[in-house]
Amino acid sequence: MEEVALISLMAVLVLLSAFCSIVLGKLKIPSLIGFLVAGIIIANTMTLSADAHTVIEVFSNLGLILLMFSIGMEIDVRKLKSQGRFAVVVAAIQLPLMVVGGMVAGTILGYNSLQSLALGCIISGSSTAVVMAVLKSQGKLKTEDIETLVLVVIMEDIGQVIMLSMLTPMLNGSEMSMDELTVLIIKIAIFMVACFTVGLYVVPRVIDYFYKKANDELISLLCIGAAFTLAWAASGMGLSVAIGAFLAGVFVGMSRPHHAVEHFVEPLKSVFMAMFFISVGMEVAIGSLVANIIPILVIFATFVICKIVTVYFGWWVGNGDSRTGFLAAVSLCAIGEFAFIIAKEALDCGVVDEAFYSSVIGASLISMLALPLLSKYSDRAFDGMMAKCPGFLKRFFAKVSEGRNGIYSDLGAVSSRTRGVFTRGLSTVYFCLFLVIIIEIVFIEIYGPVSEWATARFTFFDNTEWRLVILVANFFALLTPCIGLTRNIRTVTYILAVGKQKESNTAKDPDKVRYYEVMNPIIVAGGVDILIILIMPNGIDAILHFAVFAVILVAITLHQLWKIKSGRKGLLPDIKDDEPAESQ
Image (cartoon, rainbow, N blue to C red; front, side, top):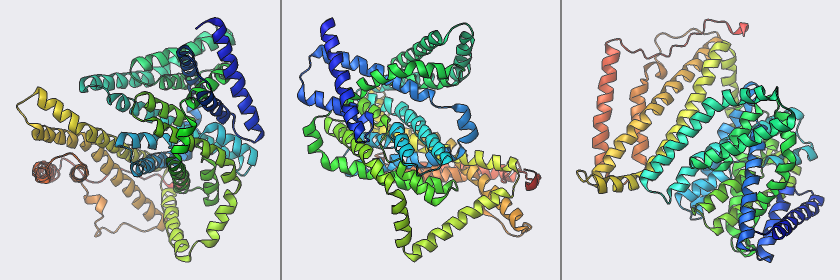
């Protein structure tokens, strides 16, 4: 592109995006929407050359890298460790439930399984900029509650980065052979392990070392260079450049000069971030928004309902105040920036079409426009629901809350060391559940392609026999997380029983046998494993299921019973709570 054409293109893009943002800002609408509107106007009123589209795409990638780098720098890993437990509970509960809600909505709208999964990931997060702007302007929540919400949004960002990492090989896999997809997954695993083992410990120390020998401008250039390097490395490994830039931001955020780097990056981010959202808007035709008004409204309604229900539930589980939990849940009802990143990645990979993409953009715009109104009347809505709630529901929720309070009371009666074991056990249960879901999603997707690929290459088994081989592999892949799940469920149940005895000052009844005392984790895990696989679609006859699993389960049971009889394996968790609760 010629120099004059490039300058004229930049003039149009920057001036139009600034004008739209200023006009919408007068209506208290976030500048982000102004950038999107500018892109929609350009796409529907101007004809750009191929060179212009190429330049905008380059600037868009620069904006995406700088945006993700800035988001990463805002994450304080130390603060998350010390203050983020409640936020982690809320995010850990609501994120997977939001994905499930999105998948259900996608199925209702007629999307395939991968498109529905992408929709669930898209609607799982909230917009940091829009949420913070609304919270600060309306002042409905206390400062500490706003800080908690900031941590929740940060956890959502981290969760969506993980989702994007997992989605990338699935999105790319739609046009790849099995060999290429296997290599891609291995490369991604190596990249992520290297980042989290080396980056978290080495990069901040290297930056601090050079900071002693350079000024703020030079160290900022070094950090931006690191962001582009990791973005390039992520792209080379088959991941989005957004993931590499985000990880670089996290590493830089742990270093001493991160405030100086943030100040240096902010002007660059403002310019190129506008280019990214302009490019997002340019993918949307006004006619497509009108034609897809029903999917737009369905996605918006799904997002709002699921967000309010899941965040409120997470707040309740974390023993937070009900009224504050409802106000906080409503305050998060703006689809986040990651929605555009994931949707654009899916569009570029050919997994979704323009109608899907336009529906996501339309729903995002409506959510951002509606949030100030929803937040403004959230307290009245809560009071109205409490006043009109039927008596039997009030009694039911009061009884459930009493049970929750009893659990927290039982935990308060045990030592801090035992509570730590409980927390780790509960975290492991959550991680194992997450791992089970991921493993099953992977195996459901690979049953057909892998069996066909293996049948074509290794003819000594037919398609059904190869599916049986994959089924057995599925069983053993699930066995370890299922064992971890049952072991830790038994542990947390035992700790609650110990706390209940201490709270009520009652001695243990020696004649009463409790289920956690006789539950063998491996036998139970094998049964759970089999149950999961039986209800999952895999194209294998049910009789073959039972024949294979009967042999496996009988073998596991006999082996474990022999271990118990020979005294080589105990059943009770190794938990001691000799330390008095008062010494916490």
